[in-house]
Image (cartoon, rainbow, N blue to C red; front, top):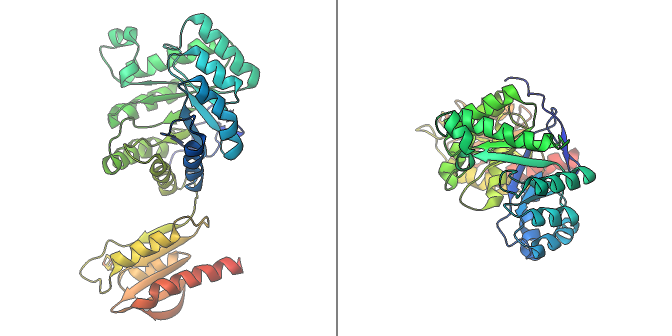
Length: 354
Ligand code: SF4
């Protein structure tokens, strides 16, 4: 794995982004922001899945006025997403947003951008700018002959420059595309020419199944190359799931540890127990556990014991039974119908002992 690219460090409500800080996971609420109960409920659900930062669209003064109460009742930074209306950006800043997501190109006049940047500078609020395939600057499309990685990157650099020219460098950038290859190439190019922290995402990735795959491929390639400081998985579905997927992507690359890691085999003709059912129940039982443990659920005595031994706790099944392992040591043989309980009793025992 390449080392993590050193970008400029930003602080969003106390959470560091860039400069070699741990890679953070974000999601975006889809509630009516001014519906404080619903918005708080969703952000708390994000938190439970390990989310580091939450973003909400602010579409009215009422939305902005809800920010203080939402912040009081939640524990992760609140980022405001604004399109077109500079006054709403000013209200969000006034009501305590921790970060701002704007497009300098559509937020109003030069004077409007100046007052927003000044207000952010006064309160040390970082700004994220971004480009996606639908918002590439016309001049760049002409110059680079269409929407491609060059026109995306040079549009993003223009957005950064618009803010840096006003004397503020607390800027993060996102360059998104629904085409995974374009998104990868554009972020690789941007990382070569700028030290701005990168917010990664495959935009409009689709329903959960396809969206998870596209996001895992796009984000995975870049993160493995040390590119990217914060991520958001976008799926057409429950935004809480975006956090779960984002965390799994980071966990799979060893970039974050969050809760249990379940290793289970795909099953084959050697499997002589209901391993799929068992693994599903174990997965369910591990949900919400904040302990960083690796649990293995394996189907046979051929490959099972090896994986089960590597895990903190594991089961290697045989016909109608399984062997329980803990930290590489065989504990005992357990009948199939008692395996689930035995596994969780052992995890509980580990909790009490640690
Ligand atoms: Fe088959 Fe055993 Fe491998 Fe599971 S661990 S897939 S049962 S060989």
